[in-house]
Length: 138
Image 1 (cartoon, rainbow, N blue to C red):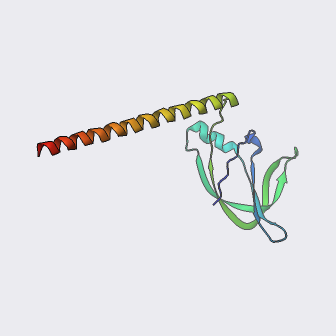
Image 2 (image 1 turned 90 degrees about the vertical axis):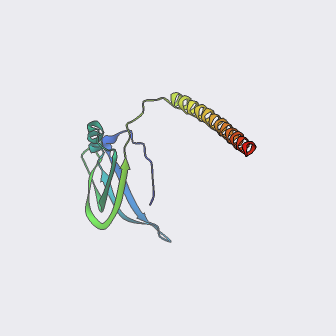
Image 3 (image 1 turned 90 degrees about the horizontal axis):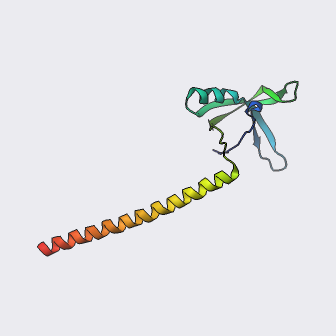
């Protein structure tokens, strides 16, 4: 299983997936497919799950439209792959805003770690005090 993350700025162009077999001297294309991404917009707008899993049959040839963009594939090769996609809505944050949020999250995590350690210390001290009191009462 191989996981990949892709940011696709123009979802109308879709996503092309190619599966290659690595050879000793040359590689061999096992097949390719073209995923249309416009139906993911419909899922997100409808509030449906944004995880989509399906088996896809790989084809041998790309069909281009008049503008030179991939429209579909054809001529099945007999190979299939399982595609599991996770779609997120795009973020409108600038790079600077993203860095600022990341820094704030790191600071918050540091604070929570310190408080957690202090809470552990207090809990251990309380347990030691309770056990000392119980020992004195015996």
